[in-house]
Image (cartoon, rainbow, N blue to C red; front, side, top):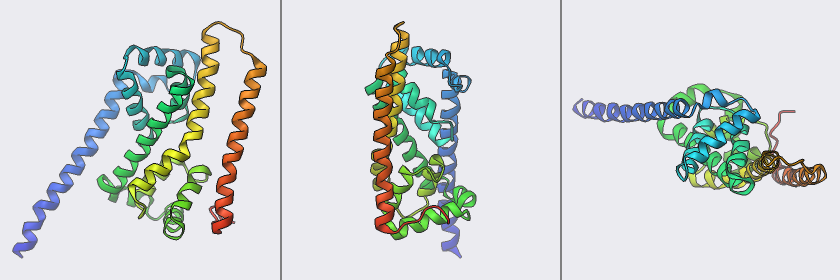
Length: 246
């Protein structure tokens, strides 16, 4: 009896720490949204993008860190990610913007994974544990390991942000998940940021867009995405993996 009583405070203390961590994350998210006016600027428009670009650039070096953290919080709280990838290209330029978008998306994916595995595991299990999506991903990881992770990252069968949490419940290692997520998210992050940054810089300079060049760039982006789409098809065929229910 005494041993059981001694264990109770330890569990209570661990639960309290998790609650405090969750509260701090929520407070940080709302603080970021409040001080940056982020929620008021989520509409994808030239005016909003210009305001957010000027605001981020006005922060100087801190703007880089702030952008990554805000992007990460967006991933954790299921906010639309596309606008952040576009904003990265607008605020930091086509190339650096791609890198910033990739960093933000990766940190967000890692944060959601950690929340699911170590902070709010019971809550995530209660929400997704009995869902067909979780069972499909959990079985896929157990049977095919990293191949299944690559497949689901490159093929948009499951909602991306939901994947981040569900993978935290699977046996996959955090380092493996993080590295694979970084690599598989890179093409999309750079393509969106590059195209947005190039177009916005041209318009901001008051120049007429070179439509032939834009068409060629879009075509190149399409070819890259097409080639990338062949990777999961090859993996699925080689491993005999079926993601969609027939």
